[in-house]
Image 1 (spheres, helix red, strand yellow):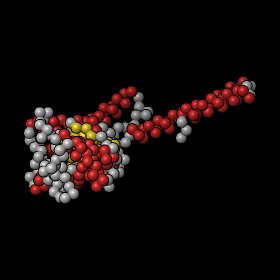
Image 2 (tube, rainbow, N blue to C red):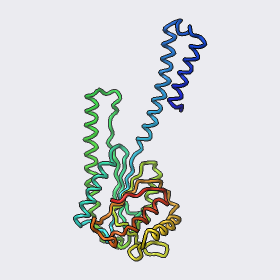
Image 3 (cartoon, rainbow, N blue to C red):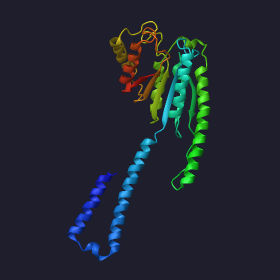
Length: 286
């Protein structure tokens, strides 16, 4: 498709050349002048419409939210601080990410078998009626009906989401924390072409037994240099997972007064480096 500025320039040049070579052309009949101007306007409007449509396609990409809830022994959602913080962030996620038809939210539990622990999957079904030919009164009615339908859906989803937050895991799977296993989940979501947003409600203490795995309960990184070295080495092992560049947020269970021994900043640096190695994704910590 031609750029709108190029089409405007072309139309202006054509008009100038016509006037220069045949200045009496537009004096013969008003019909010829009107025909020329109408044709030029149709070309320009088509170009503008095409540009608008292209913008619409980009902005209509659905939001695909993945929430990972840590269900291991090291995270206790029954603590007041943790529960209140997690409830508020989950409420914000529901409000900000689930706005349009096709927006999707999935919940996975983090434990020994994370990649197979999908606990919830919902999608916005509410759809706004076409308002192209609607007057002001009809537009207001359409907006109101859509808003009510969407809020009803989101209310149902939020109750389900908070129930998953409070669900306890008393099985043997709570002894291991396999955060690496979240990567194939993200990679699968990346194939959808949606705007991927990932949230880890976790202390991010990877803890899996095995010679080629990390157990930060036993051997956490001592400094940022070690964390970076380990993350880059692990990135090579995990590069098979094409996660794209999702927005990643870590929602930690630690209070602001937590010591560095409890809330190890080098562990956070490990994850920031690993996600950068896998796709350049930035990591925000709440």
